[in-house]
Length: 229
Image 1: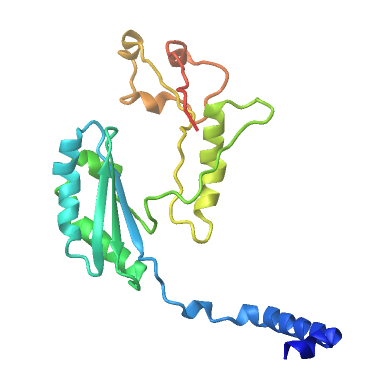
Image 2 (image 1 turned 90 degrees about the horizontal axis):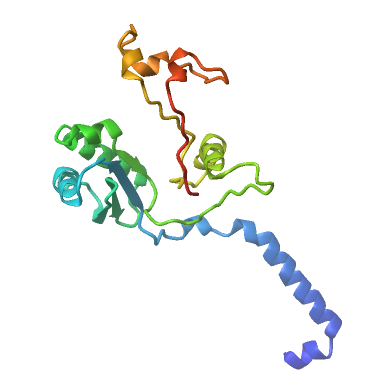
């Protein structure tokens, strides 16, 4: 057979082109969707307990949530992490083929059952359930080529204009930003504030600060914290 095509190179080229064209045409119709899902689905449960030690976080938050997760159907195992800043993350792994939407509902129901026993500082922060693993798939950095924007300005732009667009992309389960928005810290003069009729100082500040200063703003010092991207 090999000698047949060696002696007839034109015919060999015709057969090779025909096989290549047939493969390209059949490529979009391959039954890829029928392949089994090998990677097990995962859910990430995250919350925060500001000002608490790791021992207090485990006893007051992590242990209570883990006890309720033991009864969730289809879950194989879970692992939890916490840091000194008070952030808590629990990564639950389910059996292959588990409906991740139904698993998310079951996990949210389990959190609702334990929510009343969580500290008030945790419930005010909220407990989020995301259909994503704890590992990072991609890290993106934002830089200013002309130097007009510093780290704080870039972080504020990223949070307002980019982060929401990334989260709306199909297939993105979680997007996290390692930077801070612009913030304003106000120091109130107790002597001048004692004569004010407002009960909360924030209500006296304008919704969009302007260049001019009011009587209250003249006694305040404005600073912008630094941030890292």
